[in-house]
Length: 123
Image: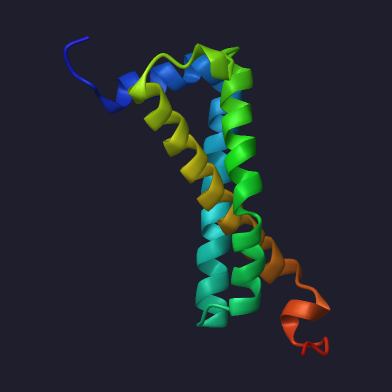
């Protein structure tokens, strides 16, 4: 492999996750991103209450992302071979944390609760 191309990366991800699951994940990411953009345009501002709840969910997203990748690759933490592997796992964790925050913020904005829509008496 002389160059790293988009086609190569797609082929690698399809091999790791399976073609159906990979494209299902791509569709889910696109749908959640569109929902997030819709919420931001609709509300014209970031709700700090929803943002706080989203931030609190970030550690869970990081752990779930690392666990999911480890399960799909049939790896364990003991298989980490060096600094590159650690950096890759930290990147996966960071993306999982950000993805969970966006998901929680979007769901909270679309479904809402009394606490975040102003209906509750928060002091």
